[in-house]
Amino acid sequence: MHFSRISGPLLGLLSITSASPAHLQARDLTSFINTERAISLQGVKDNIGPDGAKVPGAGAGFVVASPSRVDPPYFYTWTRDSALTMKMIVDEFLFGKTELQPYIEDYIHAQAVLQTVANPSGTFLPAGLGLGEPKYQVDGTRFNGAWGRPQRDGPALRALTLITYSNYLIKNGQSKKAREIIWPIISNDLSYVGQYWNSTGFDLWEEVQGSSFFTVQNQHRALAEGAQLAKSLRVTCTGCDQAPEVLCFLQTFWNGEFIVSNINVNNGRTGLDGNSILGPISVFDIDAYCDSPTFQPCNSKSLSNFKALIDSFRTAYTINAGIPANKGVAVGRYTEDIYQGGNPWYLITTAAAEFLYDAVAQWKARHVLYVDSTSLAFFKDLYPSVTIRQYNSGNANSPFAQIMNAVTAYADSFVEIAQKYTPADGSLAEQFDRNTGAPLSAEDLTWSYAAFVTMAERRAGQYPPTWNTRRITPAPATCSGTSTPGSYVPATAAGAPNVTTSCQINIIFNVNASTYFGENIYVSGSSADLGEWEFGNAIPLGAGGYTAERPLWSVSTYLEAGKEVMYRYVREQNCGQAPVVESVNRTLVVPACEGAAVTREDAWTGPVGTSGNC
Ligand SMILES: *[C@@H]1O[C@H](CO)[C@@H](O)[C@H](O)[C@H]1NC(C)=O
Ligand SMILES: *[C@@H]1O[C@H](CO)[C@@H](O)[C@H](O)[C@H]1NC(C)=O
Ligand SMILES: *[C@@H]1O[C@H](CO)[C@@H](O)[C@H](O)[C@H]1NC(C)=O
Ligand SMILES: *[C@@H]1O[C@H](CO)[C@@H](O)[C@H](O)[C@H]1NC(C)=O
Image: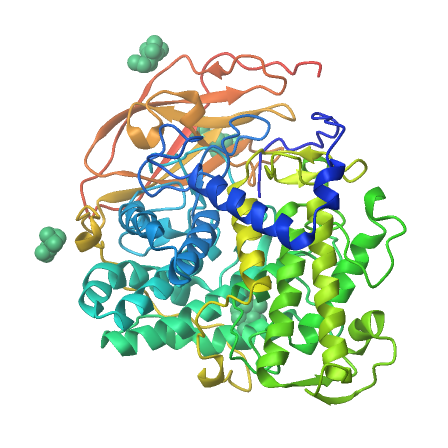
């Protein structure tokens, strides 16, 4: 995370000095992990409504990103973070924690409703656009503020979480529930993926509009695994036919040496990004062959990328200085990062360990390791006498066993870094200081806790069920940018309101408003979708079409059909001065259901703003 409109480095805001009490460091790694795993699972529960101790006001089944309300404001529910967190909860449930089932049931209901909530990305009907909305208020209502939207990984990740749970239900004699209650939610999400996978969107860090490896990799898994589930349930999957094309596109992120995490964008970065290790652990299949085109952790390309990515961080942070090449380091999002100071993240550092535990598990399950020219450099750091060849499993002294031990020790060393910078109470923030290791940014980040638990599962030999990567449809020889129109139906059996087609109308607000640099324009109004006159929930306009000839601010949004609403434009000032509002109230009659889109052409009327000195 997390996009914010005014995101400057806030280095030094939190300067806690002692981050690593000696008693914790001294403890043996396994006992640290056991303790921290329990703290982390509790940390996740504390951030889920309605009873989470740290998130009063959150609705049932809504996962809040962090209790932090300001600096940074994370007191919202994100579709991505929620799905990844709930996937962990489903896996823990499958591993025997049956007491977690109510969280899953609440989540199912919450997401069925959420799918139908009209929002700034669009509406659910007729074309599923609202499913691309990244975040909502913690009670499941829309969030109107400026954000990097749409984000197309959310529907795929939510589908994956619900598919895993549905497979459990099928195995336990509850196919009817899977088919009638849960499948309709999954079906909407897969429709969205099949329809929009070939359109750009914002990446998981909410900063880059392009095509994101993490997103595309999860989209492929969702469609491929969704097709298998549809077959078991004897239902039709709209959109799943796109899986081979998505797999084809996925291959194009590889540049011969590493995975370029964001393509279809030119943002001046190398492309090395933690995105490319979070993706492989999210699609991990214990049964996969390492040469699967799905980019499994044990894949040579994934390993080459892992080395390139980790090496980029070796020189990026003071706290990584002097750590040898066979030892783990603190890992962040990407080395060009400046958000909240651009520090290492707990969840990416533990993801590096999880990635390596996954790879070891896959080689051990296959009883063989093929080292090739692509993966050679990765292994050289850990086992210098390695050569390009096949290593068959053997006794405890065999080269195969020695390599497995070396990679496992390497994985452990990433956890030791996380351990070193985890405070005594075990709480996990979002980041830790690149110079001092002190926790930084959002406290009690749900995703940090969830990521710790999944890492601990893998280290303990607990693997999620296979998704049959051996049997997926191969990619076509030539890729094409295709799309299957989705089928969107409210999941009423799971509690969604029966919203009807086209009862939201596309309204385009255009206003001529000369602004100074740093000033922003919002539209605020009397209805819920216009924020009920509350500035904090007003809809931001964009200045993409602003020219010297025409000072145009514009937004395309969706409003409830058949309503008369009042609205006015508001200027947000650059230094925290009070917003400046127009001196008129305007009236708009939104056409009835099925009505045509409306474009408003307005000119700012009233006082103007003044730049502050800050
Ligand atoms: C759409 O798919 C084609 C073929 O794989 C690819 O070249 C193109 O970059 C894709 N564009 C987006 C935005 O996904
Ligand atoms: C939802 O509304 C549609 C259109 O009015 C109707 O056909 C359908 O039966 C309704 N579904 C439920 C579950 O009420
Ligand atoms: C516009 O409506 C709002 C909300 O009712 C009200 O506070 C404001 O005074 C009105 N402004 C004008 C110029 O009528
Ligand atoms: C906005 O500016 C353009 C260009 O100057 C002009 O043609 C248009 O009439 C203006 N719109 C309104 C509502 O004043």
